[in-house]
Image (cartoon, rainbow, N blue to C red; front, top):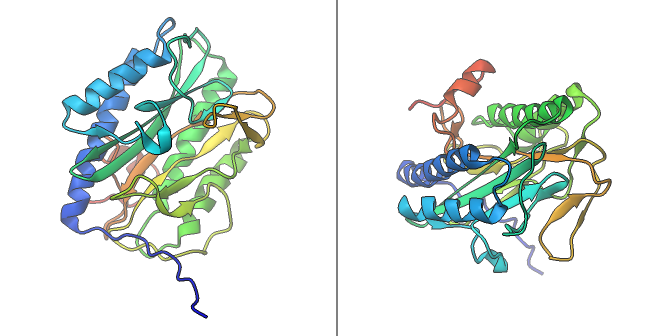
Length: 274
């Protein structure tokens, strides 16, 4: 009887990583456009239209639109919605909301994937802190993504940072992933776990890292639309994501406008050469 082999992690050449950088930069620029557009009164469908226009004008194709039947260019998840929210012309953003915007683009057959959570108008101090903790946990995970480390070193760095900040709910069952010629590839990158496990990180491997953190419990459920994942207790959630490449010099954050140099340097981590 043949044993089933574990799927290999795709390793990219330097030229292929450059193509992924082109896709990642387009995603990063699109998210910055959407960040500026978020304000009370705008709809999630308005944001979706802006995203599609930006990606196509930049020579890319939206990764999400049509993916397993998903009907839009972005995932727009508001308040208690964690991920995979479907843009809706009837969903109007209001002062005090938070919205997670997840965006992907394909350029020359290669993918970039990133997400931000944006305050709508003025939000509470508790919510602002949730966004800060979640985004910081992402950067701690990215800083752990160095050649020679193990996959779960990323997971552990994310969890350890969040646990040190307070009793937040770290979402399970959803997480980061390999990325390259497809948007979702092996392996799953969990946002929790012990260090030192999983495959060794090698130069040319690329991953999308995406912590999802709740104000309440970690428990979730999926709505009847078959996509939107929400908190079980109805409390707010935040979600941040970047795509990065493992290099000999350190992580290269392909969806960050500056490739992550400022944030990684501030953490005292290694930074890939530009």
